[in-house]
Image 1 (tube, one colour):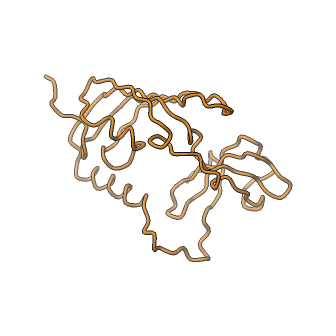
Image 2 (cartoon, helix red, strand yellow):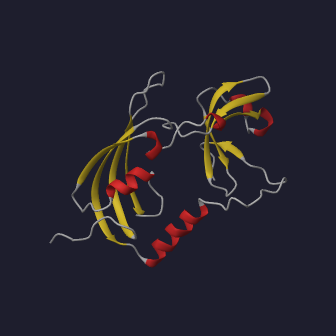
Image 3 (cartoon, one colour):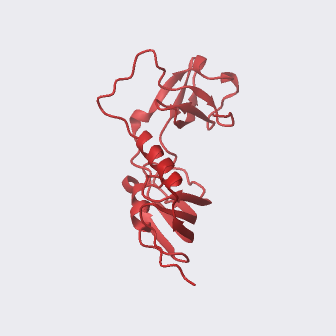
Length: 187
C-alpha cells in the first residue's frame, strides 16, 4: 500500500542524498558527498534551495537539482578568512595547511575552520563552508516519510530557533567568540 504522505513541514523524512559542487575557475575539484539523512522537514536542516525543491515528493521519488551558491552553501565571504593566534590552538605545532579544526560559536554551535596558512605567530583560517561560492548538484532519493512526533518537532524547532539571534543582542566582552579544538576532539 502506497502512502499519500508527501514532504512538507513537520514530516519526518529519510533521504539518500548525493551532492557534488560544480567545478569553478581557480577552485580545486572537490569530492562528492553521499549520505543517508533523517530530519524533520521545514526547520532549516537543509540548504534553503533544497528544502524548497523537496516539498511535495513522496516515498520512492528521485529528484536532481543544481542550486546556485546563494541557495546552496552561500556566497564565499572574504570576511570569514582571518588570523588566529597560535596560542588559541591546542597542539598548534601539529597543525598543517589543510587541517580542519572546530570552534564553538556564540551559541556553542560547532564552526569548522580550515587552516589555509601556517604563520610564525598565527594561523590563517577559513570559516566558509568548503563549497561556499559554488553551485551544487543534489540528487535525493526519498526512502521513508512519516508524520513527525511532537518531541521530534519540538527538537527541530529548538534547533531552528537557536540558529538565529536577535540583531540587538550584544555579546559581552568577556565571552570568547570561538573556542578551538581539533576536528576529532569531542564537543
